[in-house]
Length: 162
Image (cartoon, rainbow, N blue to C red):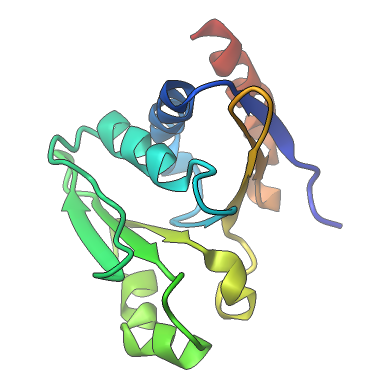
């Protein structure tokens, strides 16, 4: 049975950014593949920008909509691969990007926007986030894989203390 989501209300884009920066503190304890789902404008890229900032990446992070994947390196030599699957028409096209190489790369974090388009290609133990438009702002539901469920209390407490 999948874990229940941890719900976060994000009243403005800056809160989505802050939430990404907060989760950056826990990347070593979380899976290396994150699936970011949600409609256009629901906060996926803003979240990744916050996560990147929290990891110490100083270059400007943009959506890889046309490039399909952007690569960034943290000061700790972690590689952040940011994918956008929106423009791809099939799972085969995702594999043509070299998906398996990215997923096997040591010391990396792979973030996939629009992952819901091809759910069958990802490992079961991914971290999943569902972004939504909400009043006011946005909301996000975080689904932790089984081995990470103990972090739920930590995430909630850190978010309340920010």
